[in-house]
Amino acid sequence: MKLHMQILIALGLGIKRNWHIFFGIIAGIFVGIYLHDHSSALVANILTFVGQVFIRLIQMVVIPLVVSAIIIGITSIGDNKQLGKFGTKMIVYYGILTSIAVTIGATLALLVKPGLGAAKYIAANTASEVQATVTTAMEQQGNVLNMFLDFIPSNPLEAFASGHMVSIIVFILMFAVALAKVGDVNRPIVAFFESVFAATMKITDWIMFFAAPGVFALTASAVSSFGIDIFMSISKYLGVLLVGFAIQMFVVYPLFLKTFSKVSAPMLFSAIAEAMMVAFGTASSSATLPLTIACCEKRGISHKISSFVLPLGATLNFDGTALLQTVAVLFLIQAYGVALTPFLVVQIALLAIIASSTCAGIPGAGLITIALILNGMGLSPEQLVAGFAFLFTIERITDMFRTTLNVTSDAVVAATIADNENEINYDLLNNPAAYEDIA
Ligand code: ASP
Image (cartoon, rainbow, N blue to C red; front, side, top):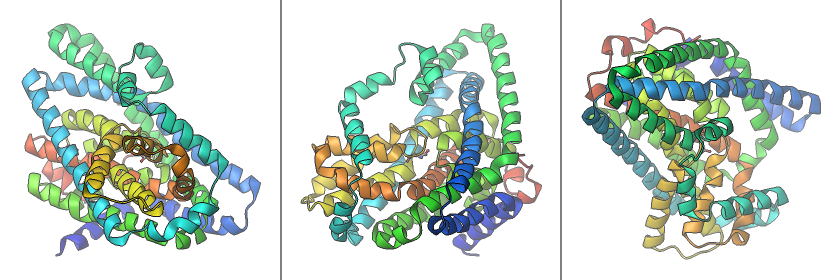
């Protein structure tokens, strides 16, 4: 059977198992389209409320989960050599997937040229709110060195309190490696975090009962605020993105898995179906992380690998975002008639790899970090505000798709490393009928 058929069947199996979440997405799209023309403040408020309850619930467990997963993951790997090997492999794999994503984005944007016909829409979309957002983002991100400095938390507790993921990870990585090095004296604290991990996974199970209404509400409010007409007016840009996302998802990930492991893409997609759907609904890979970990661990990928690779992936690896950033910047360049040289294209692609990896796994972060790319190209905010306004109109919808990719590629890399290290239970992964439910 052809691979794409196998993938579709696997996704179908995943959906069958979780038809309620899938139904939430589909119903959300229809209700959103209806509400766009029949808006009611009360319904909009209820949808926002339900969606926010779901997002907050899953966000609530992210920090304890990331901290405990990394500490358990790294201390269980133990010796420095193996840790270095895993770490290097992980960065190389994430790097390969992100580089392919930007190459696909650049190729499609250069072929289809979505920005050429966009000048007229740009003039019509100059929202002052967006101007302020973009200008501030540009100013804040102006200095790349300062940004890297921000990754080192001068006060770890402050980083925890403000939920600054990158600096939390920097601290926890160091702390976990130190714990691994001090030997047996680390037992009480590792045991403590083992309990924290188990309890947060239990909470994640409970939260999943709320996944279907949560995803429904989030999808409906996203679609209702844009309506279907916007898709028509910017179909070229959206089309390029969707084709790019589809190539990455259905061609690149399966080929990657085939090249570097024995993992079957259809089986992996089926195993992480819940995480993919929640990523789509929430547009946040950080918020989806508890579920990504639950899906991987309960369906054959060892705890040792999942707990190390997935949290780092949710912080560093944003290939869907990198693809969007490349297309969006080329779109702006084309819309504003800037002359494109091969050097500029390579520069944009490289900056997109860096900008995406500094991105946070929260809704909208990817579009804001585009400021970093533009800044690297010496562009001024004033020049681009109108174009940004245009991109913002479909921001949420593209975010839902790119986040699904971000989460899937974390799992692809985790599965590949698990395969390479003999840390995968194939009898379980390849038997979707026996999958344990998440909730
Ligand atoms: N929302 C994305 C994520 O959480 C990041 C982005 O805005 O591209 O993965």
